Length: 546
Picture: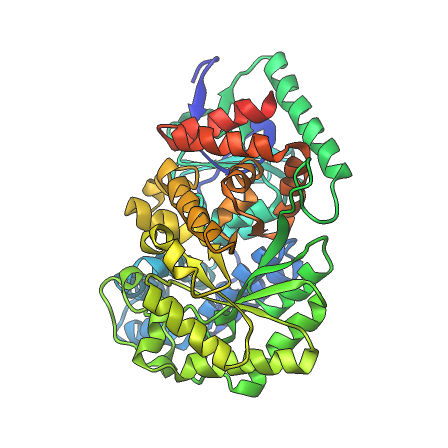
């Protein structure tokens, strides 16, 4: 490619990176002593991933590697591979084929399991490499920092990145809500996804990527580089001054909260400059087990989180399960399309006992700690569902009850839904999926899943308008909350709490502190009037830069 070219992708992780291109082909090459058999290969891969998890620099990366380690020892996967070996296939081909078959089963269950399907294929490749006497693929190490360019990256590969070596990430596939993108944000690595033409860049070619605008500059002049770096320094100054409760420049309070998925995540987040938890994903207590955790086990986990945060807000999302997250004790039927099936709050329509025990455990934790947990239900679509959930929660003794707004029906009828509850939390990842009819796990649809899509912003605005009729609090706990400029847009629409990965909090806090509410309202107007997500992002960037 020649100079003066600007490629456009989807902004996935904010920040600016300048450096040489380094392509990634993920091909293992180093020969080692082959594993004696599949059991030996499984032990080696589990040990390797476990060691990498211990060394991971982010909580999110550690969690991904731990999950992969469990997959490498999965009895179903290993059993299918051994059956093929006994039938005469070579061990490495057998484990690859078994992994592909297992992944195909997961894909057939619906979109939410496609992310796990990629992980299974990756684990199969690692097991096969061990059997063949080849080291698992390692990231390039040219001796100098670089910008990594790839067709796509698996979450496994992203979890292993060192931000001191990998300055930025550019992929031709991927999506803004993928696990890979979330990991890049947690590591503070600027990233662009869905960047067509990136594969044509020459290795070693100097480029600049802007993870906030989605632009990739090729052979840029010094003035542009200095301009981008000046903006980085300005943001760094803001970050250095930022701290404490979130608020706009004129004092409008915006609670800045953390999304967490495990007790360890919560304990780590509790020590950060954060006002509480906006989303505690309780399903992590239930997954990968055959029996439902009893009331005492659940209560102990919830109490540990409440104790860690003291008087700060903690919002627990009740079990978000379905055939995309199969739990044997729920006895849910298999479905062709789990994204549109029995999941979230709908699971208790088949029998509310699991939900009732979870609510009782939360109430027990509240009594044990003297704290007041907030609780919300996922995937609420109708007034009846909101009223029934609120009735169960309040009957259990919980006093602050809310709903997730993840489907357009809930956003459009928010005035009616929120009459029954105390607050709403918008899950922008699912809201974008359902509003644009775009599967979250299909990388080529990443641009449709951009939370800057004006249609998605209209639905958030509708939620806030309905909430205002009852003076209900609206928060956002999707990945949209982690984008500082988009955070200003959300505040302008009436959102008053933002929940995100803890690493994103300083940037959001700093930008909000630099703008007043009137500017946020103007940003919201510009974003909603735009014809496309890139146009919305550009219009708001120009406003906030002025």
